[in-house]
Length: 294
Length: 322
Image (tube, rainbow over all chains, first blue to last red; front, side):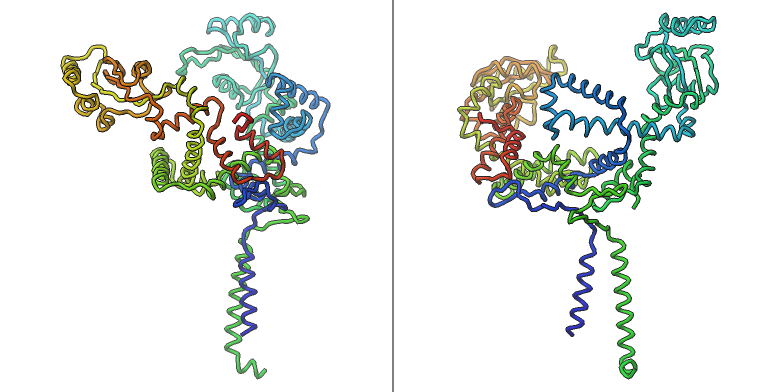
């Protein structure tokens, strides 16, 4: 009878030990606030954090670790300084900015740059490198084109602009005469099917496979728009190999490319989760579920 | 061998039984989500061979939102353990929760979704949240009641609090009433001129069905009340006991009567305390937090550090002035 009792107890212990893992702090019982008949511990705060959702923090941390070895170039340091300066200007003064970042837990501007600005720049550099390595088929999927573009007041102006270009006038001069859109410059730019540009232009570019000048104004006049737009587009190159660096920069900003990069990296670097609540939260997310390997 | 021969059936049954248990335990173990510990610490995730522990993530999140999490937990626990509601107060809180839930479900948000949302915030469900809110209101009301000399004068000056009644005659075009509408309006004037009280006239003649059953009373109002602008403007210039002339609004024409502007007549009305608390909140003085903090002081709280205590006070808006 004694042997059977021991055997049963051992089996029961085995069964009760079989429960899903959930994480806890090593110092969970440390008291933060003591009200006499109730206490708030670090463990209570951690439970609140997990209950309100840890998935975003986990993914941000994981992405930072994925990109942490990306080389920080002088150009990136300069860009980081520029972003810092812009943030300080936006806050009104350096004192106001410091007060703001202290509320986020940063002691000084350098710790803010290291935690907030530089990881974004490293991520961008990683995405550019990934896009270059995967230029095709992304270039085809996202219809990359190198173009010059201007927007004219009306159909007549656009037609005159086209005629001038055909007659040999430089694009710079034609742009200066006819362009009304402050968002455009006379310089060439690389666009994709995801670019924030009039859909009539994107439709035109999807059908262009060789360098060309739009033979007539590109317009959305047939749409329901009450004030149609008229564009003139000079397609400089359609083969992404000819503008690979610029193409990679454009691809790096596309959300689906970003997701594909991270999906690959989370798998390659064997991302694994050890907390059931966090795992379930990631599984419920359309984006984050892509990163799970379990 | 003899034992085997004698007990072969028992041994066979035991072997089958143990096999089934073994398979069951193994299946359960395979289905269990496995954890990881390194140097005595729980690992939340690993990537590229690098472990990130619960302690690591706690430090990061605590920097940004730790103070608010500690403060909210402290308040919730204090209210749960130390503040009781009367049965009427509890019933009101439950009615409030039911009303909120109706709103959500009428807008295609399920009860489960709503309750899960409040569970994430640390409450059992929406009703638990409503009860906590009622407890906070109880503390705030008691706190402000003891300090009306401090908090009422400016509120009175800016918000012009009053108890208000009205009589409505509905009109399609308030500027050009029909003969029939004029007749109904004149009936009110005749009744009042004949000695009928405003309350009696409202009960008999007012076409606002909701306030009519309350003798025309629309209760506690202030300059911030959500009322028709024409009605509000006229309401605010009247003194206690005065009745307006026929005042136009989008609903028609009204007679407005000020039942009282005396503080003593407001104190039993929770709308007054809510308006008073909200007025100061709009002016960056969170009376609810101040009241809860004041109540917590009676427990002689201790904090892990003076920095934490100050951070909580900053979060709650507790200053030397309050």
